Amino acid sequence: MSRSRARSSASFESCSPPARVTNTAARTILHADLDAFYASVEVLDDPSLRGRPVIVGGRPDERGVVSAASYEARRYGVHSAMPLRTAARLCPDGAFVTGHPDRYRDVSTAVMRIFASFTPLVEPISLDEAFLDVTASRAAFGDGGTIALELKRRVRDETGLVVSVGVASNKLCAKIASDLRKPDALVVVAPGQEAAFLAPLPVGRLWGVGPQVRQALIDYGVSTIGQLASVSGAALRRRFGAHGLELGQRARGVDPSPVTPTQAPKSIGHEHTFSRDVVERSRLEATLLDIAESVASRLRAHGLAAGAIQLKLRYEGFETITRQMPLPRQTRESEPIYEAGVALLERTRSTAPVRLIGLTAIGLAELQQLTLFDEQPRSERVARSLDAVRARFGESAITRARLLADRPQRRFDFGERPTADAGRPPNDEAR
Ligand SMILES: [Mg+2]
Image (cartoon, rainbow, N blue to C red; front, side, top):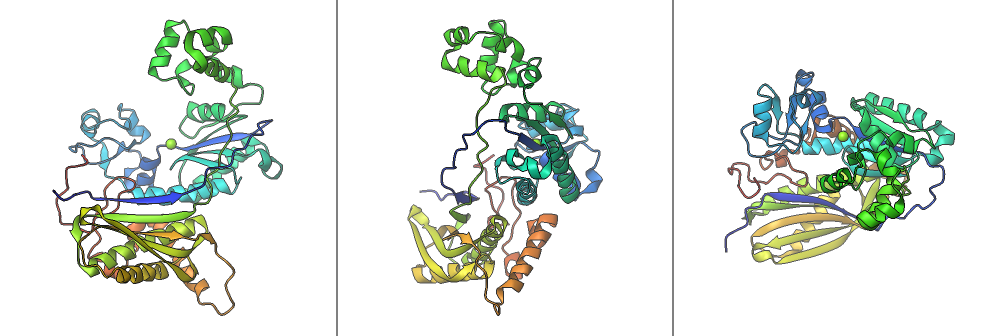
């Protein structure tokens, strides 16, 4: 059997199903969406890119696709998901950058924290986009438009990024509003004006209207949302079934769907698949340290601490084992997590070649108050300032000496982590 050459790694957080919020009366919902997120982060980190068409995703001669394009690049017709080579043809002078997924994730965490300072009801849609239900925050922060302005100001001041915001009484209108005048948009749909706001827009802007439904609606004589709103429910049901009824509701600006906050994860894990099976203990331990740092950093980002650590090993032939142990005390620092990982590795007494290694923090809880003479607060402060440096300069800014030999280039793919095998030519299974 040929060996897997996967260079992959994954982060995972498991959550319980979110609670549903059913009260939809008089809500104020924000949809916040960072403008050209990856490209904007690249400009932030390299000011020489400012004003240039920035294309994130890879080199112009690579086979991949565009992950993000700055507004300057979009003027050349470049957009995400377009093949890089097409982008290079449209925009030969574009600044092509491979991208820094770890950095985007860090910036995203910082932005989501700002969102969370306005309301606990934040539903992230992607790294750069979230719904916020600020209904209960109005007493403290003012009306939806005021909150949106303050949110835009804080994101700009604290991260240097520009966020477009739509404000409405429901998610549907907030989402369409934020997208209407990008970049740097703030569009408020007053309560009661939902249908009037939507009416002139093309029907393809509605959720649930893909290219096929859009064409079917156009064939039916409906090209704007307002025209769709004027078709009777009975007619829509006859023509498009239950889906048609739903579309009619949306066209009238009705969307009861709740903002569903993500819950604190029950576990936080990270794992790494080697491009070539590994037997050397030193490589396994170096990888464990890297993984422990990722896990600890994400524990801190969630404000959580681990009570126990689980080690996962997959051997040649896909036999997979897990071993776990409680920690002497709860932690969100890399050292004790790493030490637990090494101890668990030791316990396996195996010298078989390892294909995949991972650590998962379990028994998660808010960090409890520490005793007066505990050393931890200082190292916690150190760890937090390291997180801040990473957030500012990227994760590779701080790397422990013992990792340097093993730390390769990261590829642009979320969930992917470095293979410890930097010298190996790129494999071809992915692109
Ligand atoms: Mg965006």
